[in-house]
Length: 333
Image (cartoon, rainbow, N blue to C red; front, top):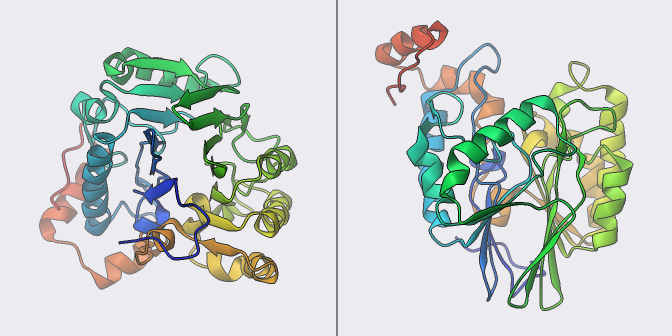
């Protein structure tokens, strides 16, 4: 389906491929310009447990479908990016049927083979778990790439298209422990798109200033993790994220808001002040699905309802018992 009208880009085509509004954890997006095609953050995941429930068969069916969508998009792309090494932002090379829906090395090979991979620096501004994942990527899927380059703070040119990366910024709050990410800006013919995954609001004022300084016409943004309020994220940090988000929707004509924020079932009402601020300046805030002209599909936040409305088979219940085993088989979906 075609994106909604009124989008301030004509030479840069933006195709959301996977996201929370499309039913999975991801911000994977295909960007096409007259010079090149870039696959941003080619990862997709499910939450292994939410509300003390594993993913519902509908969630597994969705990730299976979107894995194919991403692989097909990779065939078009010359460049792939990795903003950081969480598995909903890059694809690992091991077999996993619960979180990542990966069949092993072949799944990653489909995405990265013969590609220019522009990735978060694996040695600087990186926490221990992501450093280990970056090392594993280089030893596995990275072997199939044409090149793998650290992109932090660098600009790459493809014809008249510039692909620029920010310095490493925090994954969330200033004092967060989740590591760092790099944001990407695509420019062509005076058009500018910015991709800011997992900045979680942004909760960082510094990150907000970097986005404002870039002056994008369209911003793809990972919103604040409202569902973790008072549990893993302090209320004051979320409030700062909402304040920063208000500044962004005031300045940026179109904000595609997705990812962590949509894991809260009541995200829309909790962001009412953000929508009011955008409307005041005649700006647009919408989800990735809405941008793509599709219906929102919020599966993780509605997992309890999925199990109530769509009872699982006896075979699936039997599979659920294997989740405590070291070797987990493919779910019967």
